[in-house]
Image 1 (cartoon, rainbow, N blue to C red):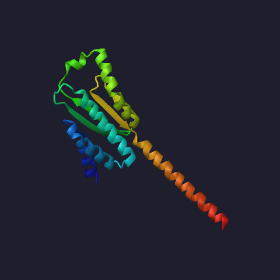
Image 2: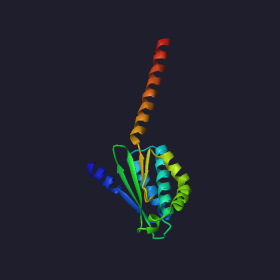
Image 3: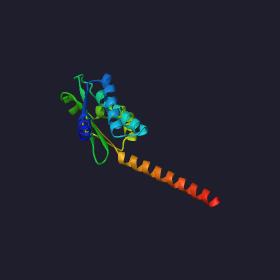
Image 4: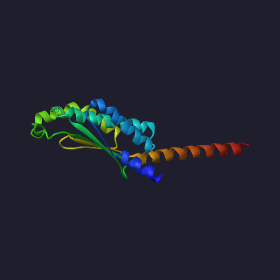
Length: 168
């Protein structure tokens, strides 16, 4: 069992996709991780949509046509599930010397997608040069909510049972 656990962790460490046509690889990657960590369907949907939106944003920023790649790294931390999504392309000096107006136009175009990601994640970090996005999902809170739900159901059950016993 320990060997299987180690192999699964090694398998989930990273992924490289080379275009929008390969987003299905990212989807499968997220699906495998969520299945391995027993993440429920609602939260899985949030993780999947946020990760694919982040990859699409980074691909859209790679207008230089340098056959950019997106590297996706996964890590399980004390905070939860962390996905580091990074655009890996040749250094583009145009982005470094981009004027303020062009930067604001690009920021405005991406604001809707970024809003969606912010709504779905617990934490998001976007690098200054917009070449990497880090998504954090707190799965510990999900387990806490599930525990509270179960506790409340048990209390309801015992309250009903007490009422039935007292009536009889």
